[in-house]
Image 1 (cartoon, rainbow, N blue to C red):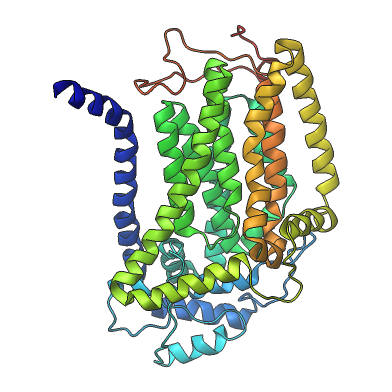
Image 2 (tube, rainbow, N blue to C red):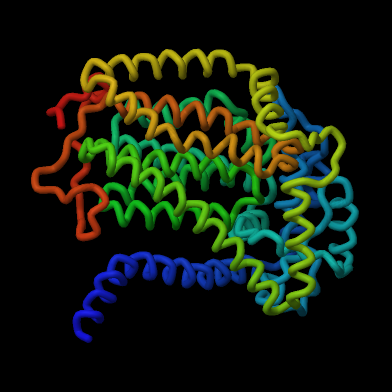
Amino acid sequence: MSTEREELRSRLVPLLPWAQGLGMLLVLQFALFGLLTVGQAVPDRPIVEHLLAAVEDGTYGPHGTIDRMGGPADTFTECVVAGTGLGASPEESAFSRAVRMPRIATCGGGPEQLRAISEGAVLTDNGYYKYWAGYTVLTRPVLALTGLEGLRIVSGTLMVLALGGAFLAVRARTSTAVALALTLPYVAGTNLLSTPSTSFSQSISIAFIFLSVALAALGAGRSTRAAYAGTALGAALFCFVDLLTTPAVPWAMSAFVVGAAVWCRAGELRGTAVAVVVSGLVWPAAFAVTWLARWVIAGAFLGVPATLEVVRRNVGIRTGGDHAGVSDAFGAGVRRNLSYWWEVVPTSGLVLTGCLLAAGVGLGLALHRGGLARWGTAAVLALPALVVPFWYTVLSNHSQIHAFFVNRGVAAALAVGTAACLAAALRPRPAAGAAPPGAEHEDTVPAPDRHDPVSDLAGAGREP
């Protein structure tokens, strides 16, 4: 009998960290809802006054605004985000508002509804609980204090800080060259730099893309288990603030970073492959749990039938559905975004050329230092790039309709592929006595010694 218990215990012990992680993720959902409630406690009046001032100044919307970087600005989503949380009765509690998340119309009907609200009108049937709308924790107090222009500055600042933090965190786990390869194509190959002034909602999402990457890298600096925890936390926070813009980007980048950190720490291909695959599964799982939690909360207070109808309708729209210019052919989302990125983004040719050259250098150095086996490492580290075409295929309708911002996934896939080739050329620098990658008893792993960019790329250190 004791032998059977010991066998059962030996089988369950490896699952304990995963059970703990899931428990912490579920607890996090309550914390996120608490933050949502805090955001809804901000009074509507100063927000409405500032948005009406923006309407008069011509800075609220309108639809069709260009980003001055080759394509349209996402003013539609910007107006949605600016108006989320408005339209409820002053007597409605912040908790109730957080559950159903009121929202005014977008750029077209928003100004009229803002004027009505300023005169005491209460909007009905305007719940927006299909998303978390966690951005309201930031947008509502900033709008109340500084107005729309101030919110643009704040969102841009957060984006720059997150980008810098991600670069430094990835650099500490890998090298300067790898960190540049992962971030620079996304900056130079998209309209990222235009978003604070034309689509602040996108700036917020991009900030949390790089926060997700940074959390994965920071976790990887402590242990493999912490890397998975950082990956899950990044996915949950991205789901909290995002409106289904480009989840494939933080998903792919985070999985790459965890794998690259394991490779640079120990130079062992099997452990690297496990890290890539597991982190590539953890990210969407945490994202899905967080999204599902939002629907569970809505169902608990607003009714299961109404919530299920919203879920069914939106899943159908995002994965299929009829829309002008949308094809239901297999791979249409991939083709649409590839062609959009190549034809509309002015720097696409330069970015592609730069990525190919950098990848070629990385593969050449990898071959010189470790033979063809290093190309296998590059292939394993580049696997997360496949998340992008996978996303385009599964969410084909969404990817085609919103190609003007979803196309950023192309630059992200190039970044991951390029960074993978450069990472494969590095000389791993394991700490003396460090536990094998993926070992459950691993506690801490020192970060690699810092080198200048040339030494980093050259892989100064000892061979595994």
